[in-house]
Length: 366
Ligand SMILES: [Zn+2]
Image (cartoon, rainbow, N blue to C red; front, side, top):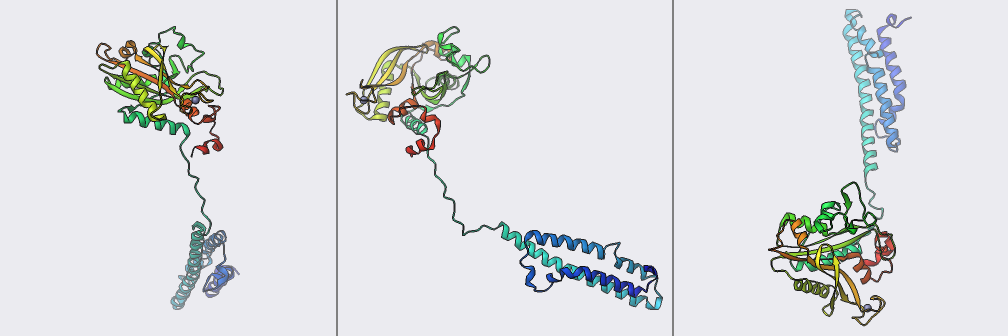
């Protein structure tokens, strides 16, 4: 007997029975049955997927129930209303059962997700490790503060420079030994990593004109083989003061004041004649040892003096290169090594300790 030949009422009952057989496994989701509560998120999602498939099979266009609906028009007119009602009742009852389970699964999934995403406030927190500034940064800030309080501005600029700023403008012409490829890091033709922060003086004078009072702390690069007192990258601070009537006396007074503030008011300074291409006259600057006060000790190698850096009156050619008139303006410049000063103050035997970033070393500067 084919489906169409069977009694329509029997067909509706058969559809109902087939649904109930498959629906049995979802019965636990109806009412207050607690066995469904322990479902994991993954399990609940799988059940919801299975329910959606069941819904398609038993209420979709190709379902047995849909076939029954098509029979309504074929039954005898006097039975049609009753049969139609039966089919509608069955369809509504099946849909309602599925809907109940679907709602229950939705709430289970929602609470499982909330639980998964919630924070367990009973877990002890991770204590953040507070950091601190690097000793070179601390040293640079001390130097910055002293000069800023004397009316200097702090300038910063690029580390890759053209020949003009690294050499020509600093009175180091083509063929000068300071341009030796053994001493510099050339990148491409016409570009080099700056070998001194003096390059910033030129940029600053071009931008601001004269008068100017500035310092330029920053990294510089030279082709030195690393050893306890050398590193191919190190930190310098460069100072420049250009105005009308600036003399060597201003230079000496400024650096004397600087070492007083950095090492104490009893600190002495000493100037030794020297040569730099960008200053004329030029001088090396020493200060009396902060440890022994000049008597001689291990830090000052028993000389009583420690070298601060180079200095001098800005060469007229340097002023001209920055479009400042040397007939109207004069100025002084100086430079000192930040990491070297830092190594002295903290009595480091090896300057490379400052660049290795070993936390066991750096933690001592907290
Ligand atoms: Zn000493």
